[in-house]
Amino acid sequence: MTTAITVTPSGQGCGAEVTGVDISKPLAPEVVKEIRDAWLEHHVLAFPNQKLDSDQFEAFAHNFGEFGEDPFFKPIPGRQHIAAVRREADDTNQIFAEHWHADWSFMQEPPSATFLYSLDIPPHGGDTLFSNQHLSFEKMPDDMKAKYENLTAVHSAVLGYSPEGIYGDTEKNGAMDIVPSEKAYERHNHPLVMRHPETGELGFFSGVSYFIGFDGVPDDEASKLIFDLNDWQSKEEFMYRHKWEEDMLVMWDNRSVVHKATGGYEGHRRELHRITIY
Ligand SMILES: [Fe+2]
Image 1 (tube, helix red, strand yellow):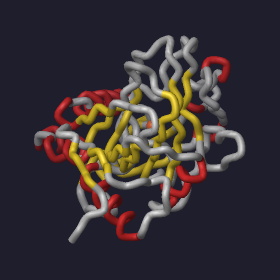
Image 2 (image 1 turned 60 degrees about the vertical axis):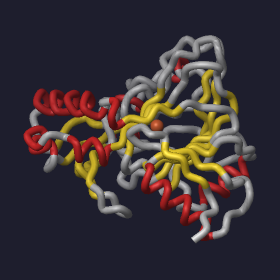
Image 3 (image 1 turned 135 degrees about the horizontal axis):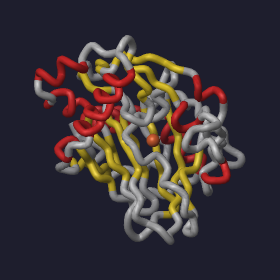
């Protein structure tokens, strides 16, 4: 079978680069299927040198499912489904999303995919880190795994998006259009170890940003379990360090990786546009 796309694995814990396809154009179903298969295999796909306007960005993402909801982000002007991850050069506030998480894992139905498209990328820093949670589960020693595999995680946006959360004071959010609200007090439980609905693989779902405890586990015990899991998820062997270029689209499987932002670009502007898909 001839293939429409060229997939080059990163050689790290997950991630691959995809070339040979212009994703600004409508794609045939078989090309979408090839991309989806590569995405399920590598968890994170990067498409360099793609020029997309907002219509084309939405059209590409929509090949993979229905648009998700962004409960605490205001979309960019004139759009319903695109939010901006933006930091101005003179911003001295904290870096957004610097701890492991799966996007919006505190929702009853979290998104399956997130798409980020780069518009303005600093000359250094600002890498996005991904950690493969299928690999992380598979490699965990049995005695440690026994402590985690039957837990139900309690997820909430309270630490981030409630009025007293880290993004609760909108004056300190710089160019991020965050809308904190009381909705952040809601909780949703998900099994900590989830079977991937498409591949059947087992993996840890989400991370320290949105875990507020485990069902039926005392708080002090839960905190230790959360921080030990965080250390485990941070192991280099599961990780892919994504280095951004302008005009690059990255899509990841929110069900099989956790991710986090990094800084190191003080004095430079950075802007990406984001879409989530159910
Ligand atoms: Fe995120």
